[in-house]
Image (tube, rainbow, N blue to C red; front, top):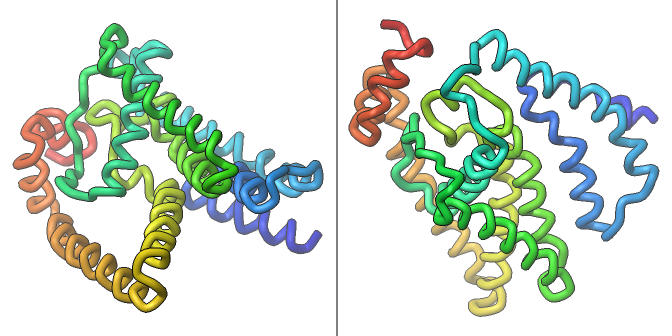
Length: 257
């Protein structure tokens, strides 16, 4: 019981810091399923207090965005199918940026949604097919890959466009929305690289490959960090990569004139 109280208290503290952590109880259940292959009734009892606290606080943030930050109006009037297209394309966008973090922009261009375009529906059906394949391949590759993608999808769900947020007025995606969700993709990619290197090159090369990856990512981080030196630097970098952001975001309510 004391561990349950401690974990729930820590969870409440995380919610008070950032309500995007509301997906934690689902993430814990996914982890239990990954390790045991089933979820028992006692597991649900353990995370029930988290659901009781997390769901209302998560919804309160959605209501705050809509009614206090004015995330309503023509720029947010999307049908369910349009939001499905936004979510599926954003889903692939975030995975792509994690796998190949190039051309990073503070404010990405907001794409045009057309629910009558078959090309845009490829994002949705591609994501659905990918998840189905991982589910069917569990006996060959284990439950890990599906669990990682499921964790990623659940954690990134609040930022996929089903709930109105003020940044959606300017862009449907932002890199910092996937900080927590990225853990799922990072873990499965790390495990995959480890398995391939171990099988092809042996244990001695694992450290070398790991060091190489860290160096490459470190250099990319250093090159990207200067963009956030000050507002002017951030503004110039964003305008050079996304000229439309000047009229939409940098002269909007988020920034002083």
